[in-house]
Structures are given as structure tokens and as C-alpha cells.
Image 1: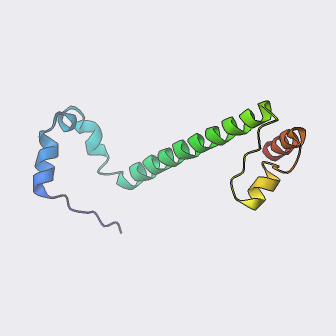
Image 2: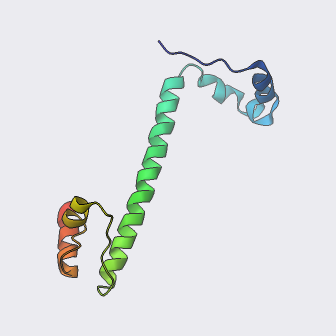
Image 3: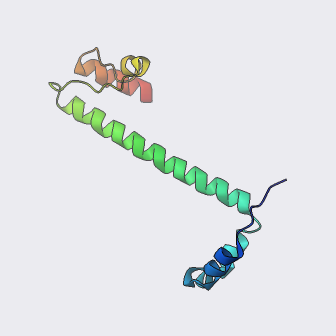
Length: 104
């Protein structure tokens, strides 16, 4: 059983008077019946965007370190992650092999 929060009347009237509600009434009305599915879909979308941004940032910085071997390797502060994935204590070639073997 889902507990549906009651929206105050003042906020409900304000929302219905805006042009967004008036322009998209048919679409927004359907969310009333599929509220849980819509919330799950939005949550999954936001999590996917968060993970994608994190992954792109890590890969970009990791590849930048590989392109210039004289720079120190990336260190996250998590010991098992630094040694198993980023191979901070090995040569640049070892870092490339570790990265490739982990992802493939």
C-alpha cells in the first residue's frame, strides 16, 4: 500500500494555474496512475547519469596520466582500488595492462 502525500490546496491551485500544467495536462495526468514507475524511471536515469559522469572523469584522468608517464599516477586513497585497478606502484606499461585486463 502506497502512502500518497497530500499536496496543500494553495500549491495545487498554483500548479494548475501555471502554463506548464496547462500545456502538459494530458501527459502529467497519466503520472497519477503510474507514480511508482515514474519515480523508479527518474531515479534510474539520475543514477545512470551520475555513474556515467564519474566514469568519464576517472577514465579521462587515468588516460591523461598514461599519456604522460612522468606524471605521478592517480591515487584515490583506497588501497585495494589503487593497487588492483590503477596499479599505482607499477610502470606506465604495467598500468596500461592492469587497466585493460580489468575492463576486458
